[in-house]
Image (cartoon, rainbow over the protein chains, first blue to last red):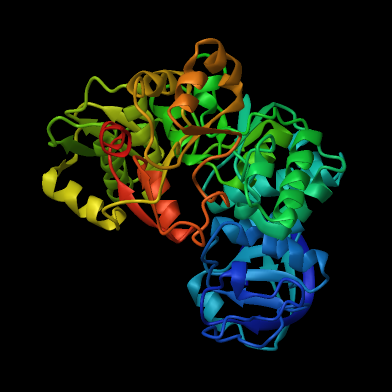
Length: 127
Length: 384
């Protein structure tokens, strides 16, 4: 499928899919990458070394620094796929050099948990 | 986005990882906000300076970045959490002080002018009309667009920081003349307004407007009211500028009823244990006005007054400092009401202020109640 590139790069890995929007500030433990928001559907799971799929980011723009901390602490996602590019996620992925793409609704709904994919966020393709 | 060859090469890391990081940020924000290119800017004003706003993760990021990043254009910075010159008089955690020092050092190492002020438009010379700048502090962005003849988006901490490093910004939103033209007019219907009325008008406008809004029935604003209007607007929404006079399109009234709703939302106490003046910080005009208002009077309770250190010398030479301190006012530099650890809910339950922006953050971040009233009423009721 074709996707819009927000932050360039390439990644290969399995998909971790969140139903709810993510609040990076407070929602994820920046030292472990484990989702710590009890009301989130990914509660208790680690986002590290996965291609993280979620609708969009919410909450304070400081959440961008949390994404950077995840990368610095070696527990960041390999890449992110969103439905809508919010500025916090876009800034966070940019400063952390994590590929970020936006998929359209039909394609986004085809993404399946645990599937291994190759994300080419230069050409703008997922296969 | 269409990039030039040089921009493309910097993005690909051919001029080092720091420039690549900055260009990645501009491109990501540009792609996310529908921009087609980058344009040059002459001045960046950065937010994300107070340790309370960026935390450990922000401190670490800036520390890493400052190892080899250098600002390419004039770069000024927002207030910190406290005033280093007077911090020993306050009960601030040692760790907070260390973290704040680290952030200060990182920005200065990258070449920031140590302004620590949210009113750059009042303490620096303004470039010529139509100059593009990148201001991340919301009241400053709105003031720059609406009063100073400059062009900026209501930038975020990251876009302004990346602009400081590259001297560029995505060309989107308010950088486009069509978007600067308001399609909504708010008709000011409240009589005998003061700065608090204008703060609430701004807060109302921010909630209902898009990128730009027209205000009709507003005239004869003094500096205090201008700043209050900008700060109120920046607090409640995404609106980044206003014009005066009626425009085509939708019209809404701001009347006594609307104003009361906002007052009820922000005013949660009929009195306060402490007074804070300054969000935005008070400039020389306002400090002069305050000194005049306080002649022969003294505060009945603590009053913290926040200003930029750029005016320190002038306020001393003009005798304002002496007069305000005689009246019991506590002058603080390089910091501001918003998110300051100097206002602690362990010590105070409620705070008196004339700032709509201050009221919002005192409630949501410092978790204290607020008694909102105009400066004139504060002087009448809280001094003797």
